Length: 114
Length: 115
Image (spheres, rainbow over the protein chains, first blue to last red):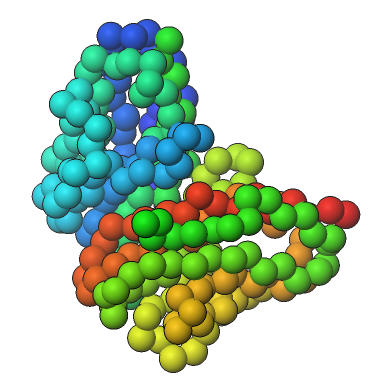
């Protein structure tokens, strides 16, 4: 089975530009998570969805960040306008509704804002 | 207070030796889950092992086992017969509350296996 798919794997953009990160969760998983990883702050949960509905967005840094999940197989994280401090690795993860709810991560998108 | 504490920023171990990575947690909720993830230099986060707070036995997955000591609030990861490919960052994480989904991660331990 395919794991979590993220695109692009690398993104370099200039300050002020809009950035859109994409994620396809594992088929059949009910939960989808967006994380950000930096050296200074470690892994931070930004937002998560249950059955396409946003449940907790308390980790979203500010209004420049938005996330959507229009269907069970696709989610986007958008940053508009981007700033250099948004540079990080952004992970998408998904988990099933059963068992230990273990989360399976995608390969990540390394974002650099210059 | 830190929810997850990993006190070893780095560890160096000889190949084929067993390794114990420490993790302590802080929660007052009786229902919680503990997880370990591996992050190699390539960057992906790999799920290794899970332990539920009500599980009576320590979790095991191949060469990985979780030494769960509930009274001490510790959930140490044990890797038996270490291999060069085990060199990576290792993160301990916790989910609090029945049905809860949010994971809180520790700062990680960088493990280096020497040949």
